Each structure stands twice: as C-alpha cells, then as structure tokens.
Amino acid sequence: MPQFFSPEIVSLAFKRLSSRKREGKAHLERTSALMYFFAVDAACKSLNVPSLDMNPDSLIGKNNRKQVELEFTKLVLVCSVPDGISQVIELGKIEFGGTSPEKRISSNFFTVPLKKASSQKNPYFYPGRPKAPLLMMGQSATGMQWGIQYHENWEMNFPRLLTEIREATPHLDLAIFLARDQPIDKSVSILQEAVKIGLSNIFSKNIVEYFEKKISQESMFARHINKPFVDHYAQFSKIYRNEPSTKICYVAMNKSELISRIVNLENLLKSNGIIF
Image: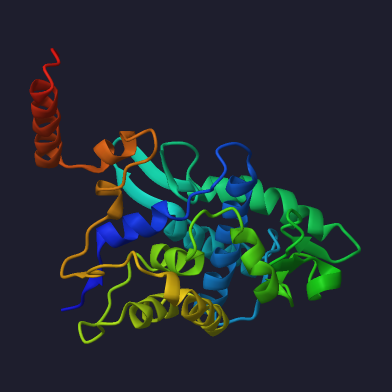
C-alpha cells in the first residue's frame, strides 16, 4: 500500500504560496503562466516529445491541445462536487465555481498568446510580464506556425515568477502542491525524495532536476514540515481555509463533516454568550 502527502502539509504549503501583496493582478497572472508552463511540460512528457504542434486544424494539433487541457485541469482542479468545482486561479487561494479549467486555458492561453504567435514573424516569448519567459512559440522560435516549446533560459527566468510569494521556500511549497495527489512508496521517509518521486510522475526530467536543486537550496528554511505522510489519500481542500472566504471548504465536506463543523461553531457561539 502506498502513502500520500498529508492534507495538512499540502494545505500549509499551498497557503505559503500566497502573495505578500494584497492588491494587484501580478500574482494571478504569474500563477496562470506557471500552470500553463507546467501543463505544456506534462503534455510533452506524456507524449514523449520535446515540443508541441498546436495547430487547431490538424489531428495532431487537436490531440495536443486536448492533452494540454487535460494536464492543466489536473494541475488546477482541487475538488469536483455536484454543486460545482473548486479550482486554483491564484496560488494560495481556492475559488469555487467559475469557468472550467478546460475553457480557461482554451479561451486565454490558446486564444491569446498562442494565436498571436502563430501570425507573428518574430519569435514569441511567454510570459511577457515579467520579462522572464518560460516558453517560446511560433514559426521563428519553433519551426512550426503553431509550435510551442521551452524557452532556452526558462530555468534562469523561473524564480522571477515566484518573487511575490511571501515565504522563503517557494519551490518546496510549490512542488508539494503540484505532487499533492501522487502515491509514494512507504519505503520513502524523506520529504525531498518523496517530492522528487511525485514530480517525476508528472513532469519531465528537466523540471524534476530543477526543483531538486532549488529545494536543496531552500532546505535550511524548511522548518514548517512535520509528519508529511498519511496512509490514506485525502483532499487538502477539506481542511484548507481561504482568507477570508471559507465557502469552498464547506462545499468539499461530506454531511458528517458539515454537522461536526456546525456543532463546533454553535458551541463556540454559546461559550461566548452569543445568541444565534
């Protein structure tokens, strides 16, 4: 039987990925760029190719788009219940409802930068803000009109997309979140090794090695990890609390969990003399 990352550890890691700034859209935009990049890499690994032809008029292009959509969905979808979905729009926050991940990437990434790159003579680099591209697209950059592949300097540029994260271990916390659903052999007791295994199940060797190096550098600051594994898988969204909204947590709970939560809240109100 495998073991899994503790939902408490995943929840803590995810919360630590929040932006230190309360205003602005930079963190949201960077989250999107990161998730698109990871989706492309995961698709390349799944298809065993170094680049993707995303031509919407060819069978290969359509299949590649579907694969990227699938990988993006697995990355950002947190929970799916009869009332709707919960997903990551911005690192550190879970949102309930909204546009499905498949439509999000199709109407944003495929329709805007990828389409623009297909008609541009010069190489197209993504993201353009900040100027720290992870991907390059278009004929001049990839040899394919609808091509997409890794930017040659993606490893150097990657940390710049994490500069708004408020904690000192962004790579470790991000890696735990990305590998949150992966089963880990019980013989593994070291968190860093478990993270490496989890990432290896999803991403290319280059991504895994990059994270391994960065996590090693952050290890001296990783004092927040305690009891990282559990025997049974559980969604971290059931214990995660957005700030200030907790709606998604209640949506993800089953009936008994909701009853327990209500009783606890009622007792808290009673102990403080609050009439309800």
